[in-house]
Image (cartoon, rainbow, N blue to C red; front, side):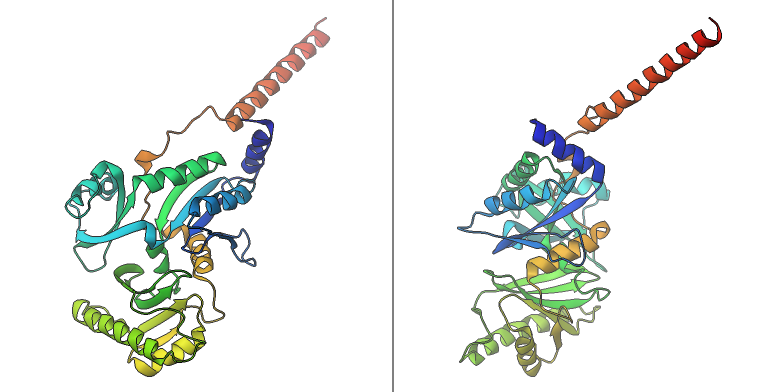
Length: 335
C-alpha cells in the first residue's frame, strides 16, 4: 500500500459508513450521487468493455466512499421460479446452486444464487450469477480498496421504482437493450419477458404505426396471460420507462391501443434507466430482498486494519502521557 493509498483510506474512514451504488447497464455504468440534487454520474461502455467503465467509475468513488453495492443488468444473470426451499432463509444462498442444478448448464460450484419469496405463493424467484462475473467485480472493488457489500439484480430494484405502488406492470428498455415487460406483486417481480420482435425507436420516426401495433399485441398477450395466472392480484397499471423514446408519445399510443391504463414511471421528467436504478437503490438500500454476494463468500473481518492500528497507537500514547504526568506530579509533591 503506497502513501497515497494510505491517505485515501484515512479520508474515507473519517467520512465513515458511506456506500456508493454502481449500476451496470448495457450502455453505461452509473454511479449514485451523494446528494439528492445531483444526477448519478454516467460512464459510457465502449466495445462491450463494462469492466473498463467500472474502473473509471470506481476511481471516482474511491476517495468519497467506504463500501460498494453493485446493481447488475439482467443481461448478466438468469432467473427461475422454483418451489420454496424447505430450510431457513439464511441457508438459501448455499443450497440454491444445488437445488437449481437440473435447470442450469453450469456446475453448482460455478454459480452464485439467491431468491425472493413470491407473495401469496409457495414459489420463489431465484437469481443465478456466474462465479466468473462475481470474481471480476470483487477484483475491481479490491483494486480501489472499497468493501463490496452486495450485488443486486436490477429486477429487485425495479419493483421499488413506483413508490408505494407495489402491484404494477412495467414496460422498460435500457439504451442498447430490448423492450421488456415485467409484472410486480408487492414490489417483487413475478413475471418477465423480453420483446425482441420490436426494434427501437418507436417514437419520433415516420411509419412507426406497424411497430407500435406489434408492441401492443405482445403487451396484450402478456396482460391476458397474467390475468389468468395471477387471479388474486389486480394489475391495472402499466408503467413505462424506455430510454431513447419520447415517453409522452409512447404512452399516448399505448393508451389508444390497450385496455390497461398506461402512464410514465416517473411523473415529473423522463430519466435514463440507469439514473432511475441508481437513485432508487440509494433511497431503498435497507429494503433489499436479494444479494448475489452472500456472507459466506466475503472475507473474514480483519481486526488489524490501518484505522485500528492508528487508534491503538493513539490510546497507547495517551496512556504513556498520563503515566508520565502522574509520576512527575508524585515527584513534585514528594521530593
